[in-house]
Length: 230
Length: 118
Image (cartoon, rainbow over all chains, first blue to last red; front, side, top):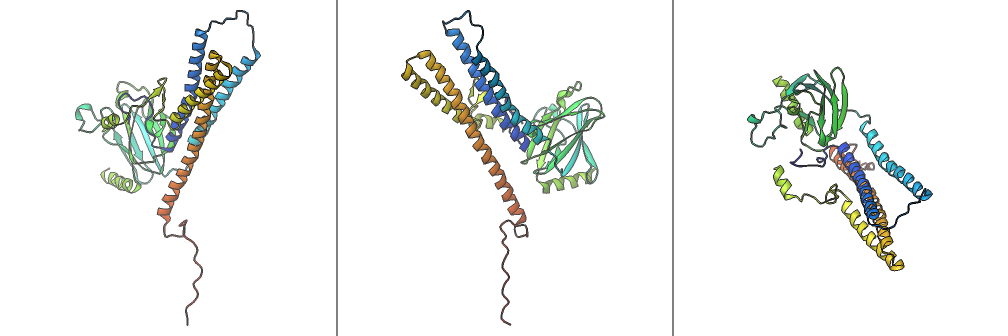
């Protein structure tokens, strides 16, 4: 999860998010260099005594400041498109989970083998136990196995919501009457937090998403337990 | 636990408030190489021409080119290492999973044993 006053991305927990982090580093370095160049030019312009009131054109500088931005854009676009297509690669998911957005909670359905589902409500602040995170923890987490491709089908029951987990690099709108699909692989066990990302009413800020990734063997035990309880 | 991690780690030094040179791989080396390249080119140009202002311009150009060159060189090597790391991880996982089976990657076909004395 994010720590207080964090500005940057959270640590990546999926291969796609790792690629996005690397792409962000690449683009940020380009942005940094452009900013440095602009700052230097501003300082140079401000501190010079040289003036030329009669300059009309200059072929060389025009060529440079046309070609250079084009080159920079290509340098940014190529890795960007690579990741875009990487995110849309056809994969063979081991598990499909349905995430439904309601006002104001998420519900998850595991219908691959035996049907079970549960609601996921935020733990109210007054009911938090020591160690739990305010506005982030929920009563029932969405549990998935690690190192397994998982498909999530996202929709909503009433108004627009958005299912987002930053450390997995996922954000997908939950639209009533529409089924959106996203897929991911969680690289390491852990608990990953996200929040509803589409304004949906009074308690929009109080319907978090919590994904718990556990090894497959423990996931099987958990799903057996959930079936028995349902 | 989050606060302990935060206080134990350095908060990171951000150039121009955006580029965290401590956390981003290759950033620190690229900036340092750039600084060195900038000093070198600027000084050399000044020694050759004694033009102060133009030396600064040349030094800045040297900074940009050296930073970019070092950055891309380091990132390409980094990317190759990450690909190798993924192959190795996959190989270790497969070795554990397939050990002793027909699919074991280090399982060599044994030559037929000669029949014993009758």
